[in-house]
Image 1 (cartoon, rainbow, N blue to C red):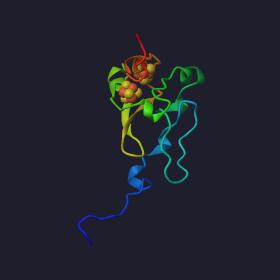
Image 2 (cartoon, helix red, strand yellow):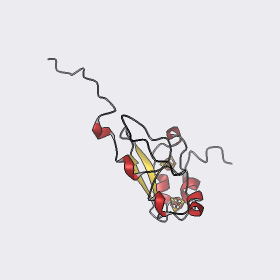
Image 3 (cartoon, rainbow, N blue to C red):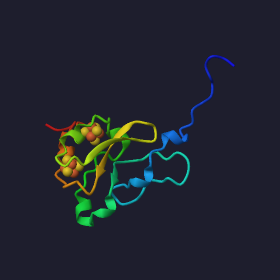
Length: 121
Ligand code: SF4
Ligand code: SF4
């Protein structure tokens, strides 16, 4: 056997998979954890089931596609409620997760995000 293995690392390996059962998307749907490799598609929330529809409407959608977030964590630093934590996705890259129970819908996290404000004056 050579020094370097040619074995490919599958993204389905268990160490790639965060505990997706604790997350939901803002519309209330949950991440697909039924089988295999399902990268999350947009902002993940925890404790979403604890807030009513009115509060849910005010929760921030920090990114609607993963390409809209670079994991800079500016949103987490700006949040007065400490409601945002950077947590790894299925590929080990950190993305912000919002604690719906702690969020007050102030939008500071959106205001500081460079991806949301690139076209601003
Ligand atoms: S500030 Fe924007 S780009 Fe930075 S981690 Fe938060 S959502 Fe992602
Ligand atoms: S809307 Fe306000 S309270 Fe909610 S996550 Fe963003 S900064 Fe924090």
